[in-house]
Image 1: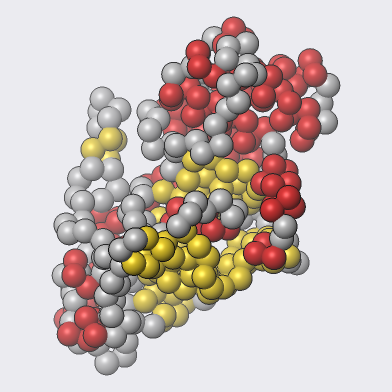
Image 2: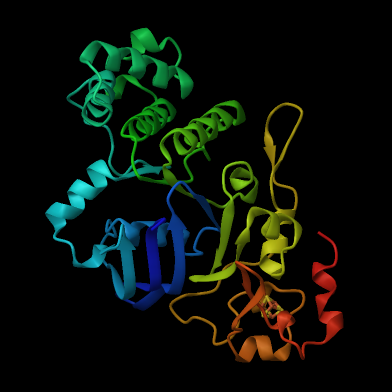
Amino acid sequence: SDRLLDVKGLKTSFFTHVGEVKAIRGVDFHIDKGEALGIVGESGSGKTVTSMSIVRLLQKPGKVIGGEIFFRGEDIMQKAEKDMQSIRGNEISMIFQDPMTSLNPVYTVGNQIVEAIVKHQKLSKSDARKKAVEMLRLVGIPSPEKRIDNYPHEFSGGMRQRAMIAMALSCEPKLLIADEPTTALDVTIQAQILELMKDLKDRLNTSIILITHDLGVVADLCSRIIVMYGGLIMEEGSADDIFYRAKHPYTHGLIKSIPKITQKGDKERLCPIPGSPPDLLNPPKGCPFASRCDSAMRICMQNMPEYNFVAQGHRAACWLLHPDAPKSGLACSAEG
Ligand code: SF4
């Protein structure tokens, strides 16, 4: 089958000294081979916890408390840690904004990338070195033919981040999970890295999960988008569904808050959504977005909205989509 990853009913909590923080409250999604999926939401929405749950890198006191995760038809939750390490090394690569798995300080940056290329792409050492130089150039490392022999501590933080990206891409994984991979980088480098990911997808049929708070970043790469909020999926659809036919007020808010690029090449956040995400120690009974939603009705505070399927593959959890909802309530989604 074309199915690479299937996440069913995922629930993850953090058991803190003040109580159980319900970070993921029942999330279902899948990704097919060669597909790029965007997971978008503000910090605290649960998008990063979702990816850490998938690769089983959740730190204590985090714990998956429900649901199933199938990777290539096999239940990841049942795997021994040793097998999981092998999956993380060979089949699933991860790029984080703050590299969790940082470069090894005792080897040169080049050595580490060359090793990844030799192992995964079966090239000779000298070809792998050429390739590593090319990868470093593509992620924006200046004078890569010299820099390749530097040790990680000789790189700035931003350069280490880019070297990590070069390494993750060199592994040619089946699934690449990139969590805010380009947030700290300037727009030119960001575009180049997204281009590299796109190339990997087209060339090797790699599946990609791109996690970001910035809906603008997923537009070019991802054919399908999931919008998360308060530990739940608020809306899911094709990129066109989300950008042109969004149904959820939170998605509308995210679209309005896409940073614009100024003439100087800086990013400018135009219209942030006022308010803050819900307290997941005591999650709201009803819609998690209700306290920030201009269209909130009484029922929104009391009952969790169910998913409404607006079209094939397009679903949203919002009371406005209920057949009995007052039509005037739709005002907020009339203009994008
Ligand atoms: Fe707003 Fe209610 Fe829809 Fe939630 S369910 S997004 S509060 S209208």
